[in-house]
Image (cartoon, rainbow, N blue to C red; front, side):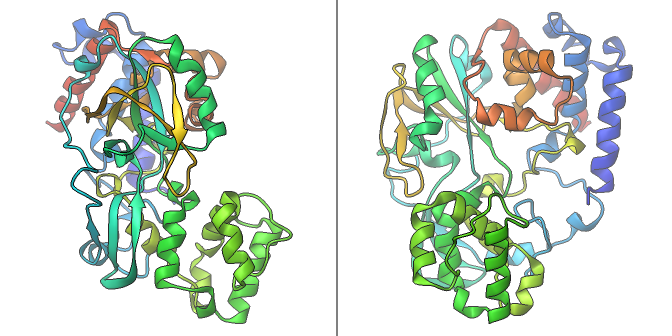
Length: 398
């Protein structure tokens, strides 16, 4: 259930878009920077700026159950252990001294003249996970990321499946100075990754469940109830055949995690998947909300930035889940930017999308499935707009 805060924010957002008066609502120093934007674009920026702390995970102005210590955005159901205990009980060791390049703080004007391609990825961390919920792992798990994958000295700019990268690799050579800017998926986006099931099977096994619990999970997988997809021929989850299959069948692996994410299964020995998602989540992204209509289906960009190979070149990846690396450009990993809304940063894409539909509900999915539809040139208009957004955010703090 959405919190009272979010519902009120959604209503305020809609009202702001209907009744907006830019002469009254915009800080004077921001007005000259927004001359080229429509009233609707400025109204949306103004409304989102008031939610910036929440969208960035820095503020938890919530009411209702999600203020509880037993919730975090990667779990849609109540945790069995308070989140502060999970935070204190997790140990991640950096993978190597050359893996994570220093994070250089950037400004958006540092990207002027480049072309932004959104790199939409899960929230997984990087490093060696050695302890979960206070319990040491017998076999530490390598966490490959995530937004910090691009910081590795021996990695590409981005890892994905070859087919999914085609839209990017085919478009990158058509634009000058391409860069990739990270944008996070929902908190459950890590369900697809091997990292999640690797951690799961270090702390839990299907053999921990009763036969009733195993049958319940098997039924979900074979009928498609409560999961993405249907797998009528899936082996029983407690069989060696199933364990082998989820190593190579990513949709089944994701569905398995979804099927287990059910509090009613815990009485039959099922795991708390919220704890597992917490264990693999990047600390910087831990408190980000998932996109929803309650915050205008908005999300922030700028957590990580990398130069992209201008040829759109790829190579085989060493990432356990994704088979292909999109190569970095000569400058490599660049740093992190002040966070800004997707609808503002991807200005041309947003305008194109509003020409298709006034509704924002499908925006996250549309951009995810077509990240190269309308790459964004960082021109002076965009620099001015992002400066104005920062002014609005600062004013909203007062």
